[in-house]
Length: 140
Image 1 (cartoon, rainbow, N blue to C red):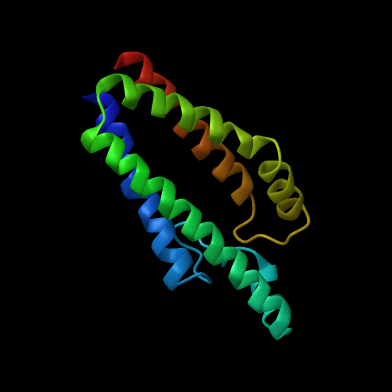
Image 2 (cartoon, helix red, strand yellow):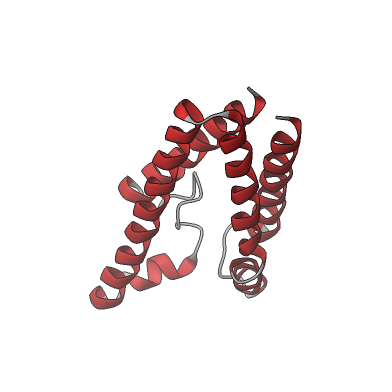
């Protein structure tokens, strides 16, 4: 039951991000892209802004696919599949520290992210997600 709860909580949380990316990408809430100064700068060049918007919507679509799969696993999957899904989530989420975290940390240090030190907040939040995924998988 704990695995199902953690999966569904994650689905709900990430759904807010998908909605923000689709309907309010310039927002600074729900991990949209408004905290990046490059979002506003991209608007100065319509070709670049269309490309950035395409990438934002592509991310939202990819997230939507895996959220719907996770919801299906939570509702219809057995306990073993749920636990394995949590371990897969933990492993996949670890990739954040390989490419994304160094890049957002660099942009944060260069003053291209507002609020300052957002990269550290995001890094801690993602680490806590990973811990929750692993703990729920082990408890389940």
